[in-house]
Length: 151
Image (cartoon, rainbow, N blue to C red; front, top):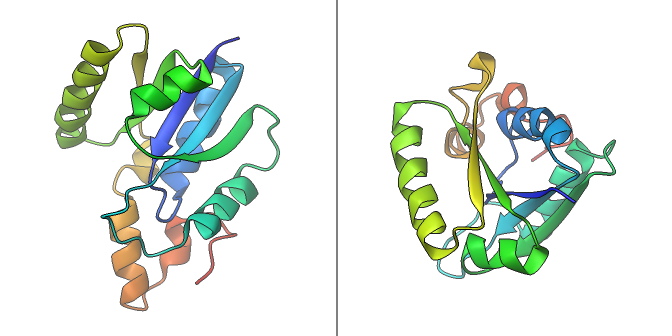
């Protein structure tokens, strides 16, 4: 079984995340959307809320699981018997950042390969950070997130 992990904070999930997951579905038997948790990081939304939004956004696929994890992504992958990590690339800065993480992950566990997917052009400017800033300033965030995301 080909299992992939799509890690992130998903604070909140965006249309870019949803698009990447849906485009990756034909490549794998199962995708685990893995919500990374970090006790030192302040999230805008609770883990439960983020998990619910992900599930609602992707409810039509039996190939998707949503879980949370702490620690290294490669350790989570090993625990879940996943051989692939999915990452989205929006621009050249993302590529450099994600390349360094992928190389470190490969050094820690050479059995796990990172797969980069280019973000669709219409979503290439969207990030959870931008969405949170729009939300904090009472802007129209709905154009950047799935319909289920309400604040």
